[in-house]
Image 1: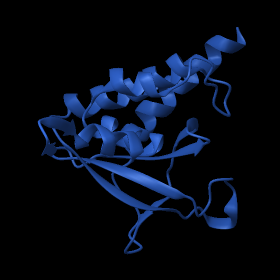
Image 2: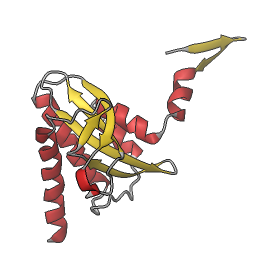
Image 3: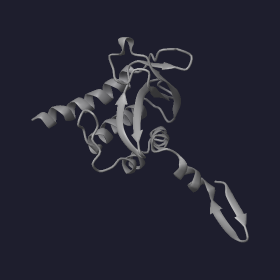
Image 4: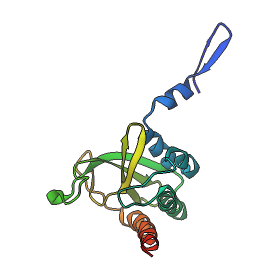
Length: 161
């Protein structure tokens, strides 16, 4: 923690720095730190994604991914940034910035995107076509992608009933 001391007043500059970060960046940091409770605070109560899933359904899917990382022995998640390079632009997210978390022991990855508008998270999605800045395609995404997708599919099925 860096502090500024002048005239007997102490200002915590970490708090200032943290408040200036975009909500998407804070979301990613909390994801890296396995802090699902902090992620929950970032999503509005009325959050609905493009699949019409709510805040708590999305949180449950994210929690399932984080739990799977832990089950695989991962204690740290390294962040990469890249692009979605889906062929034929079949996805509305083609060429979007995508993030990749890599488990330090399993080597599994969670490749995802997050959209933000006016300081609010508007979409969270996984990606199967992540390419890093060197043009390398993600190879170990299957386990986390399936974990995430199955959890979301379960909620979609329940919502239809």
